[in-house]
Image (cartoon, each protein chain N blue to C red):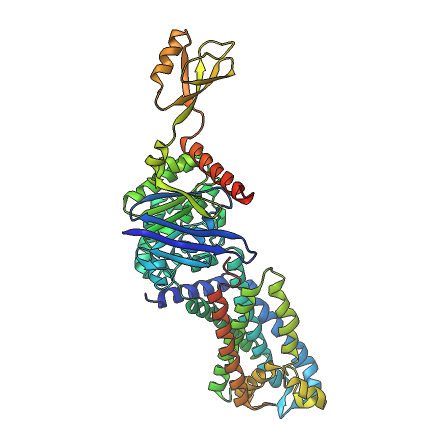
Length: 314
Length: 254
């Protein structure tokens, strides 16, 4: 069963801006799904419509088989939303934020108390339950929003840039938590600007740009399309010029580091053996850019070129 | 889904909010009305004598109580709902399976409860200055509840349409307060020249204040039945308008 089905979804704002131009999207139950796109691409509008914060112009959204227009209550009961910005009452305590949210979803008080305790412990916030939320750190506020979104045990959790602006330690712990939640059976839709986050967490991906889906496939399939990997090699000894090796494009970044474009069919073994033959010793190597980031830029750039060409009548 | 749970959650949250900030919500009306009773009722009122057979102090008590009910039921909803919008925690309600009528009922109930609670506080203060003998208990209670409902709805609409904090102070300052003072709180419309009597008849607060006064001391300038019909009619219209605004997402959705 699909956790989410979107058909021909369009949104035109009052100022005439077409944020969504008829998108179709399916997310399977249990999936960890990445919805990516540059700023202003339409992903926040799509999430807004799915979570009833924005009215669609036309099209349909169905959540676990419940149409958002005709079975609104049932569809909404399935969703938990973690928005981009902190949006809870800053004067409420952490515990009351969760209890109120559970109440809005019709959770009886006894069960709400139990779920609140469970979610706050899972987010490592139980000790802060009686703290007024405005006194929490940025990372804790993010975790409160995740706990709040999970308090009614949603089947579909939408995380809209949940790790934006948090330090790497908290981000890693949140990744672990998201993986745990997904493994327990909750479908997750994640939007993020950290593409390594999407690459390491998500199984399927859609890229949206200028209101249309430009890519929708499994993460593995998408990454397999990347033909050339870029690596930076740190050398033991300084070089005056970049070595020339057939099949590889090599640039000297500094006297002791090289930028190498490695086609998939050539691989790294031949590169290292050729470098050894030229008495060049490699001390370490790293990916120049995140693989998904490279694909993302390629897809978005290609779409941008298509749009310009269409606009100029070419 | 059992809608009593989200409704109760909203109402309890609202009650907790205004109780938590009682120095801003419950204390000021007690002080202000005590001053009204002392200055207008006691010091000046003793020189005025009686109006329609009631002492001046007894005459102004119902109006002052209802004026407090009006301003506080309105203020509760407009400030609470606008803050909810401003802080964007309205999204908690919009994402959840809470129907629009439950959102409206929850906030309006919060306004009614605060309005009536302030009314009770002011009534208790008035007992220090006047004898509060209720002539028609059901008229008194029902017009108080209907008035609180009407102005809670008005506050809700104001909050929905407001785009800044300035927008939520315009109506109380430039509409509610003048209409309250001109609604016969401190005088009988019979004391006005004919032209002003006619103009006053267009002020809906005149009807509510007089109906409440009739309930408390048995004196009114207008037909009490007409007051109930007008108030009920306004409530129906404002309820439908509020639900329409919520349905369209005006002021709360992008």
